[in-house]
Amino acid sequence: MHYFGNIVTNFTKINKVNAVIDIGNSRIKLGLFQNGKMIDCKLANNEDEASLLLGKIEIKKMIVSSVRKENDWINNLKVGEKKVFLGPETPLPINIVYDTPDTLGTDRIAAATGAFLRYPKKNCLVIDLGTCITYDFLDEKGNFNGGAISPGIRMRLNALHQQTSNLPLIEAWDAKIPLTGKSTKESILSGVIIGVKQEIEGFIRSYHDKVANLQIIFTGGDFKMVENLLESRPIWANHLVLEGLHGILEHNN
Image (cartoon, rainbow, N blue to C red):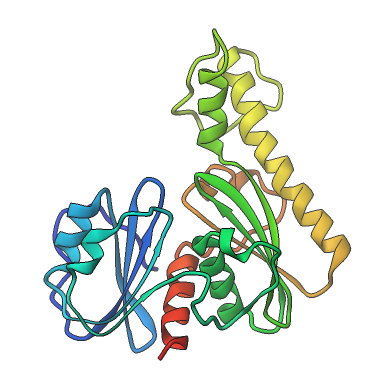
């Protein structure tokens, strides 16, 4: 299984790879693909780290997905054949059925594409637990229909602390979360963590009631916070966004 390691060394020198860059709100995810498969991946904390990692690699093609407006450092990377910036006009393997496609996050598009490539003939509900929690529905015909966005776990914890006078900021906790909190810390964790669990399972039940042949796919770094609380055995695709981005890159040959 591929994993994101700490930034301690550059990517191994590899010739003619496809580079996938997912620039998020807090960090930058980098993936290298060769012959259609991911061969390495890293997390960068900032643009300088990302440039250092990618600067010594011979990049054949590149795709960039970004939630940020300014990414001038990308223009300085040498790419042999093609550089794709994912946006509303980019050709996709899936069909976007969404009232405001110009406002649709590229990470949501990429995750839905990754789900389509994994399960091309299934209805898919992609649940991404990151800064926000997103629920995105892709039907068995490859139509991205939309979904839902709610605050992520850390966003909820920060909001409780910042928008009240006395509630503490909870940054670490044991794996077991009590349903009935016996302290303020436990009560906050019950409300947030178990609340997220109930929210997730409620969405899953609603989609199961609505459509058949449904595949549930989880992704995002905060999945591990709720994994053991979920009633069903979930499928976690840690690199679903990177997989989807590479699929879009290949679609643009």
